[in-house]
Image (tube, rainbow, N blue to C red; front, side, top):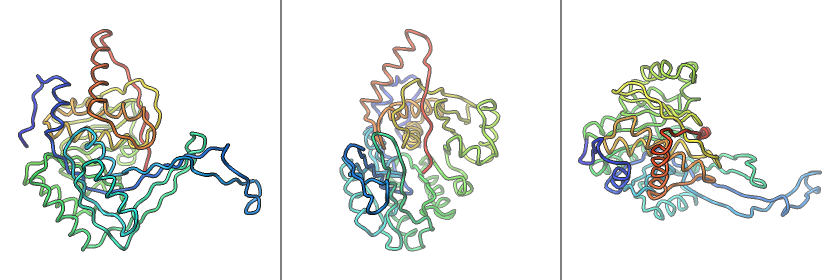
Length: 352
């Protein structure tokens, strides 16, 4: 694979220290996540427009990288050298995404497509309650010219890459041919591939090293996925996907998976969730780091689960630092030493 593999004798702290030696490439559907926070106390009636309705002024507006961009942001915040390749609209939002990536030291190959808007997920909060989400998007497949430009960026980045993450939100970047070509090129460079896809694109990504749906997506793929049949359902899903390793995120119940070592289940951690947006992206980032380091799948799952536990305690689409993850793992290990067991609880991830 690469020279970054670690053996099982390394401590958690030593593994986390190795993050800064890694180089990751994220390819997929890039979004701009927008959060607007309003207060009832700062609103006014607009009966002239609609009786009983009020106008609200955003007290705070936050714009962050979403979708594949959030995976890249998570990796970069963990000190992994990160590149991001994807498609935006030929609009003002391209510049915001570019500036956000630059601010996180993410190298980027952003292809501007005049035939689509930049994908935007705008979330409205009223008095700290999540009220609604407004989407701006075009989910049609990108044309051949855009696909060729995207592949050119991927091929350019691969020789300096330790792991590739394909982040598919079914917004038009991936076709069967593009996905298969990327996976094939990664094989030639001995680079592991981690995939998160929408169920409708399930056949695109056969041969990937890790495919990581959430429980709802797993249920859609095999006609049901139950905690009561966790091992059998996970094995059935794994056989369906045609990948080397399968991981399923289980919300507050952690995650489970099937790989060369058989079935495993990593329980979640008992914490008070603040916002579950983006947790799935954090899990895929953690799995990618584990794959790049050559960790066993179970160990990569533990790393991903720990990272998501930190994220779920933060508001909006957030990222975590290597220090935050290290501190959490240290506290977890101390609990293990004192009680012999660690219990769990992480909220599930939302659909995009």
